Amino acid sequence: MALAPDPTNTFLREVDENLRRDQLRDFGKTYGGWIAAAVALFLAAAGGYIYWQYHKQQRSQQQVEQLAQTYTDIGSGKAGNALPQFEKLSHAGSEAVRASALFAAAALALQQNNPKLATAKYSQVAGESDMPKPYRDIALVRQTALEFDQLQPQEVIRRMEPLAKPGGAWFGSAGEMTAMALIKQGKRAEAGRLFATIANDRTVPDAIRARSVQIAGSLGVDASAALGPQAQ
Image (cartoon, rainbow, N blue to C red):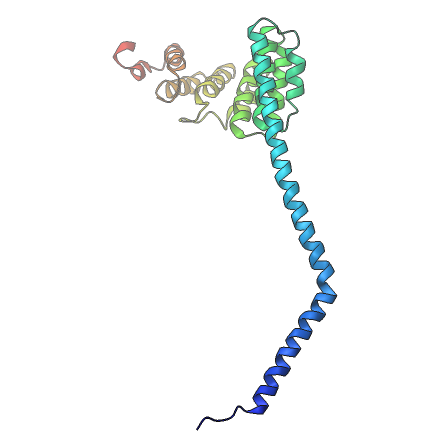
């Protein structure tokens, strides 16, 4: 014979359900407005972020097109407005566009026999901490090469010290300038050894390695074996 439900348990269950329903209703009255506002704010923020990303993409695309058009104009002999255009693009949001514009402006300045402006552009790239390191490194190398004759040897060595490491991307150029600065300081033996190291580094361009063999030899260090049988 089945037992009749306990009226006490049934009553407690009904009270519990009513209590939960009342709590949910009270919560909705108290915080409903805040929840709606939060949801609206989230949707607005998400929509704004998506729009901003789209706007950035469109803007970056336009800047790349402007940069390409300026290169085309220079190639066609229409370089008259190129520097102002590069200057405008050097303030672009995209780091790649900014760096490209600054490097192009420096190259054009050199072509127009304006090394002071070129140096300033390279210095600008080298000094911007938000630029990717490879851009800053090559800019510092080129800036130092242009300023080499005006700099004290120790300043050249200081600038190139992080880059004059065997196997590094800029070891050839940075190492050469460091070695030449050492010669200016009268440290010929140390410079000769550095040139020999450059000559033996297979990651360094062949032209720089060949030149380093010759300079090392003039300093009393035989590095001819670095280029193999053809150097003999």
